[in-house]
Image (cartoon, rainbow, N blue to C red; front, top):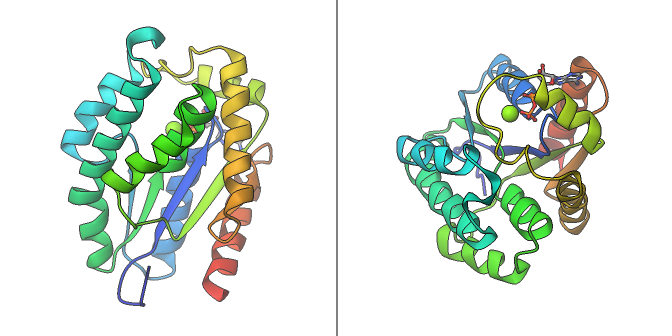
Length: 212
Ligand SMILES: Nc1ncnc2c1ncn2[C@@H]1O[C@H](COP(=O)(O)OP(=O)(O)O)[C@@H](O)[C@H]1O
Ligand SMILES: [Mg+2]
């Protein structure tokens, strides 16, 4: 979607505790070191209205919403995030690195909760349209390792973490399926490696994208 004047939109995806937030910060620093303007943002959230919706999604008991309502809330937040944060930044030439984007909705609500994937695709078309990330990095690691890392974090954003292990196994497989179906956009990164090694693998994936 870029013609040189616009920024690049890069998304990091993966399960709980995969290291997304850690690597978003590293990637933003790398992009700035290379002389580009860059913002780091996250989903759900990334804009004032979307952050309000985030609280509804990541706090409270797991059974608070069914999968369809969850998907609708995620896409409502996403549309607001795009409209007020992502698209204006890209248009101004600023690169955007997002901690999660629409692949998370497909993995969590589609694969995890078993919501109809074609319907999720239709919601994408309604809420987002033709817009896609330029590059998506999928941080992959065993569910056990990720949940353990996530549990060591403090906070009350535990709604998804509290779902059973089988849910998270389906989410992991979902991300791998998404990557396999769209290899031009997605790169799977081994997230069991150390933080520096993962950052290097992400840099290599970015360079491959820029050379392609
Ligand atoms: N490669 C890594 N190896 C070990 N621990 C990590 C690694 N990357 C991140 N962590 C730690 O694991 C926890 C979860 O990382 P975080 O970046 O918050 O993951 P996510 O945003 O994907 O849930 C944090 O405490 C973080 O410091
Ligand atoms: Mg995070």
